[in-house]
Length: 347
Ligand SMILES: Cc1cc2nc3c(=O)[nH]c(=O)nc-3n(C[C@H](O)[C@H](O)[C@H](O)COP(=O)(O)OP(=O)(O)OC[C@H]3O[C@@H](n4cnc5c(N)ncnc54)[C@H](O)[C@@H]3O)c2cc1C
Image 1 (tube, rainbow, N blue to C red):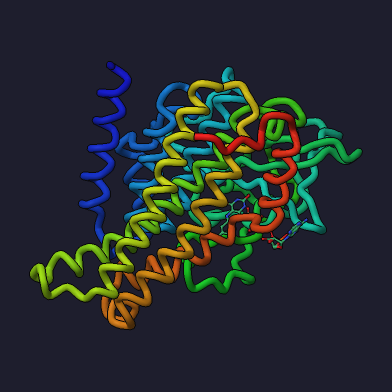
Image 2: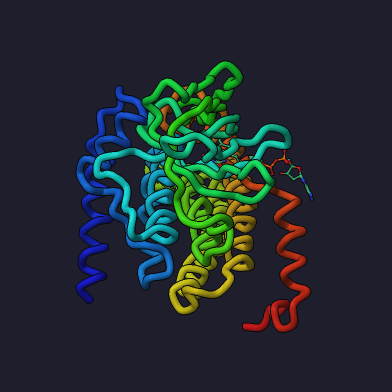
């Protein structure tokens, strides 16, 4: 009961703070404000309040997806560090990026050969918010090929170069998922080699991204709903009402799946959550694409051109959805269903 009240207060506080954010500022500034107010202290996944964690991510996403990208990365990094290295908590006040994507060529390599601590060399791609956060938590590799090894790095040092040159995104522009180069950068090892992947939180955290996509889709659906309720009953366009019905069915179904996945994770905190995680990510991806399509078709050009928050959301969501691994994840889910008892669709 106490946990519920605490989480309820956090969500209410988050909602009020989001509503009061200065719209002329950037998502990086907004992230600092949320952290400064302690609104990054989300319940850890798998500890009884996974749904509230996802509700917080969805709320932030409904406000702005670039902010959600930064906030999700920051809160995921905090959860990862608490899980794999609980005895070495991060410095207070730091802002975190969580960078685990592996490029086909070029890795970040750990070097312990010199006296004076651990060094990092190489490059990392897809580092969201690298130009805005104070620290990064990232996957690196040992020179003999062992890994991934989590390391944390302070961005403000000569051995770290953020390269924004290749970033041409229009949607999600403000989250700048850029390349970072490391040259003898000082880093700290976080947890044991392989700990990043071999932990229950890996899929529990991965599912949190679906909550962000859901929040973005919900915001677009809300724009259609707002438009329709302003019209007196009997005068509402039947095609728009049908579109609202379709997005309601899609969003209700994915919301139910997210709630069920959160409950499953809380009831099985140490079990492999990959099937649940893949399922919610893929379901929300399909739902979000449908919502984009239905709402866009129902409302026409006007909100894309004249409603700034809508235009931003509609530009950001398709780019953010590309963080999905698409067909690769569908195949991975299919593979999970080969295990006895997994392919069960009964009510
Ligand atoms: C806006 C944005 C922000 C991001 N921020 C971060 C971040 O902060 N941290 C981070 O670690 N990463 C981040 N990423 C990177 C993300 O995690 C992915 O690594 C990246 O999007 C590339 O995905 P991919 O590897 O599936 O793409 P690719 O390997 O380029 O694949 C493209 C598509 O090909 C198909 N495909 C590929 N291989 C297979 C296969 N074997 N079987 C079936 N189909 C296949 C899939 O449909 C897949 O979607 C971000 C990405 C985006 C778009």
